[in-house]
Image (tube, rainbow, N blue to C red; front, side):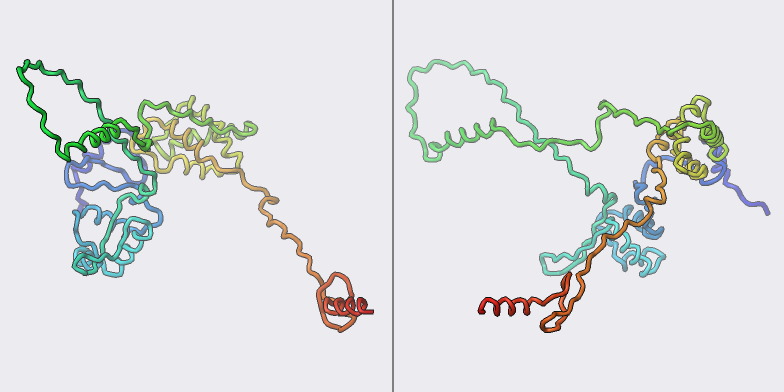
Length: 339
């Protein structure tokens, strides 16, 4: 019996742009329009969290506000046991995604409040405070035409509250024009129109020997065999050869360089030469230390004062040269002074 094939999946596979990788996973990304949850790669690809903890964090993020996520409540909805769920919750709590605290309600009951943060690293960044809105000056009012009166009305005596009103009005008027101490707004992401910093230069070897040039050229030209999306032109290879030669000069293995340059590329890689330039510059390893640098530093020599035997009372004491102890020297000096 033949193995059944998903024709819709195979048809979507043929519609993917660009050459497909020879091995590994192939993503068919369909944009969600409803019922989806955004999960960051810092959680999905966390190097220290277990797969159970990552899956439980995704499940908690998809739950609505106020849902019970205790160990008993999660065990009732998930196939995992209490021990596995408790261990996953402890992992999330240790890495800052989850926080549990006991809180006393107004009626005296003590409950456990659980707080989940989808991006705990963002809480450590400085918060940007929005500036206070500035008040616009009031538009000048045009006085209405007054009709002449034959006899003005007699002014009424001011009330005690009204007598104090001008002072309050003057105080509010002064506060309106007083300078306000606004916290400067520091954007975390620069605007698109901000000037970009200059790109760091490509690494250069101390001496580009013919052997290094030949090895670097062969390594760059051979990348498309291991990763089909890394197809480079001859001009790109000539520009990147000095950087690869600098890696080889620092005793980096060709397989290590190839793995560093081609691992985890973007989904749609339009400019492979730019990605290689960035990785060759940013991920340049330091030179290997020599045997003298790896040697343990010499410990400082500690001078120990030896023991001596007192000539007077034959008691042991520490001194650089033989003689009398401190008590015998004191007694001997007192006897000489009395004589």
